[in-house]
Every structure is written in C-alpha cells, then in structure tokens.
Length: 406
Ligand code: FAD
Ligand code: NAD
Image (cartoon, rainbow, N blue to C red; front, side):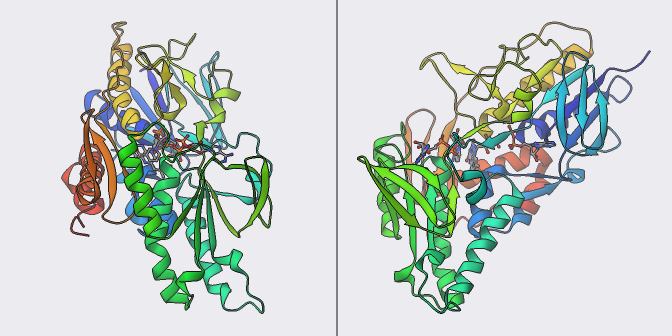
C-alpha cells in the first residue's frame, strides 16, 4: 500500500516546527514527508529588523535547513510555490508539481500595501533576508554617498519609517543604535541625520500598555527618533513620502523609506481559492481550512479569533510555533487514520519588543510589565528558547544571543 504523502509548504516558524516534530514522531515506513521552501535556509523573521539596520549579520538569523531537518526522513525541495489546487490535491512549483494526501500551508506573511500608490516601486520592506540585506546596504551606501555629492542632499541621510507598530518601533530602535556607527564610518555629522517614524494613529503601538508605550517613545526620542503621529502616508514617490495631517499635506524628502505598516497572509493562499478574511484563512478549531479536510494552515496565513475581544489574534511567531504542535499532532492522527483531532487554543505568554540594544518593553504572564535591560534579557531568553526547541543545544550555541550585558 502507498504511504500517505504529507507536504509542508514554507520553512518559517510554523512549517519548520511542524516538520521537525513530524520527523520525530512518524516513521519513514508510515509516511512520506516533503518540505518545500524558497531557500535552503530557515530564518528568524523576528530578527529581521536587526539585519535591516545592520546591527546583527544575517548569518546569525538564518539556519541551514539541513542542520535541523533530517534529510533521511524528510524530502526537502528548494523551490517556489506558485499555486495550490486543493480540489485535486496538487501544488504547483516553479520547477515542478507535487501531489499530496495531507498539506500543511505555512507560507507566512506579505507586506500589506493597502493600495497606497508608490509602495511597490519606491519603498523598502522588512520581509525576508534578501529585503533586510537590501535595506542595510542601501542605507549604508547613502551614507557613503553623502560626502561625495556636489550639493547638500539631506534626503540621503534621512531615514523614514512608515508605521509605529511593533515592526516600525523595533526597526527605528535598531537604526538609532546603528546611525552613530555609520556617522563615524562615513564622517557624517550626527546632528544632520534624521530618523522619522510616521504613524497614522494617535499613538505608537496602538492597544499596548500606555506606560510601556510612553517609556519606549521617550527612550527612542532621546536617541534622536522623531515621531509624527496622527499622520497618514498617502503616497510614496522617488523623492520621498507624501503625508497628511489635519488635512494638510507635506512631502518628506527621503531616499531611505521603509514601509513597516502592516502584513497580510501569503497571496498564494487567496489566489488558490481558499476562503480568506483580511488575507488570512479563518481556520477551523483543528486548524483545517474551511471545506478542505486534508489542508492544515499554520502561522500568518491562518486567522483565529480571540473570543474575549472578538478580534483576530495578531499574527505572531509565538502563535505560529504553538500552532505547529497541534498541526503536527493532527497530521499524525490523520496519517494513522484517526479523526480525533486536537483543537488549537493560543496561550499568550507575553509580548516583548526591543527598542535597540539592551533596551526593550514587554508584558509577560498577562500583567507583569518589563522595561529596559530586564525586558531586553527576556527577549533574548525567548529567542534562545525557540532555538533550543527547534534544534537543541547545538543550534542554541551556534545561533543564540548571549550578549546579555549589553
Ligand atoms: P514566516 O516566518 O513568514 O515564514 C514563511 C516561510 O515560507 C519563509 O521561509 C519563506 O521563505 C517561505 N515562503 C514564502 N513564500 C514562499 C513560496 N511562494 N514558496 C516557497 N517558500 C515560500 N512575532 C513574535 O511572536 N515575536 C516577535 O518578537 C516578533 N518580531 C517580529 C519582528 C519583525 C521585524 C517582523 C517582520 C515580524 C515579527 N513577528 C514577531 C511576527 C512573526 O515574525 C511572524 O508572525 C512569523 O514569522 C510567522 O511565521 P510563519 O511560520 O507563518 O511564516
Ligand atoms: P501592525 O499592523 O501591528 O502595525 C502597523 C502600524 O502601521 C499601525 O500602527 C498602523 O496604524 C500604521 N499604519 C498603517 N497604515 C499607515 C499609513 N498609511 N500611514 C502611517 N501609518 C500607517 O504591523 P507590524 O508592526 O508590521 O506587525 C505585524 C505583526 O507582527 C503584528 O501581529 C505584530 O504583533 C507582529 N510583530 C510582533 C513583534 C513583537 O512581538 N516584538 C515585533 C514585530 C512584529
């Protein structure tokens, strides 16, 4: 009898953890597991703001898939998913096609542009290793250019960031650390550099604890970050960003604009005919897609509601990792012919955001607030814990963050 074929799309938090858990719990005699990913490495999306600013190298963030996945147990296909045909149980890749009996979709997020003109053409986004490397090198190149221009061009050393959600705040925090190094390297007067964070809402980090938000904003302002709140980015042009506040429009000249104002699930999922809500699939409690009993969706492609707030849970690595536990248990049950599937219930252990080296804010266990160094250590503990779960002590020692005294 043919073994059931399990195909996992995407080696992000959800896909990688599902794969490593399945390789431990299912024997090669009972299942064929295939993992598909664009690159031969997995990366820590949660560190990309640091790679984008250039405060850590991308090789610390990426992990070769072969270091964690046992290729004797899992077929790894390095390719790009083009579409899924859930009615015929097929996945179209750029260089081939795969058939499955059970599918796990973990293709992650894409930047949401909300149809704003010029974002696709003129904005940088923090999405993956390639886009992070590009931001780092582009900003550095502009610092190098600055003293070679015949006229003063402040837009070369003006860094504008769209959105003061967690990604925008974490990125400006890293940039505030990086700018003094760039100024030293390229003989640029630090007083001339601007880091501007433009946010449509009246506050940074909307909905987060206000005492922690105040702390973060004050700390960032002290390091030179300018906040423009209640200011909507209307358009991005080759010259800069057109913003509107109180009905007045202004062009902020910048050659370094990073759009960090929201995400949606991979468009592949929507184009493949799955039901979506705000770009994400409203999964059933067992994480299966509506209408498809053989497709499980994990991570940022899945939408789950918080019954207390009646709003969707924000897409996070924390939830993607927790989903992988239920996804792998449910795949195991399905492969073994059982229909007793587990239900997913997120357990939010906390939220911690960095605001630069050695500084952070966070809430853990529902109410305990953390500021500064303590929060920063907690963030590193969370990051290191993931590495331990994914690849054990060996991976932790290779890629972990141990610089807790900075
Ligand atoms: P992803 O991590 O997005 O991975 C998707 C994978 O699929 C990638 O390997 C990608 O290469 C691959 N892929 C995509 N498309 C294709 C294709 N067509 N073909 C083949 N492969 C493909 N969350 C937290 O909980 N805590 C944090 O501190 C935190 N910090 C963050 C910081 C930043 C800068 C950002 C951007 C996000 C942060 N998040 C954080 C959110 C978190 O990173 C995401 O929720 C999480 O990455 C989602 O995981 P995922 O498994 O769905 O997919
Ligand atoms: P977000 O949706 O959380 O924040 C986007 C921000 O951009 C909002 O404040 C919004 O008002 C603003 N915005 C939208 N359109 C705008 C416009 N036209 N002009 C100006 N501002 C505009 O998105 P994010 O920060 O990219 O985060 C994505 C997900 O990743 C979230 O679920 C977040 O919780 C998660 N994340 C978590 C962490 C962490 O836990 N440390 C870090 C980064 C991201």
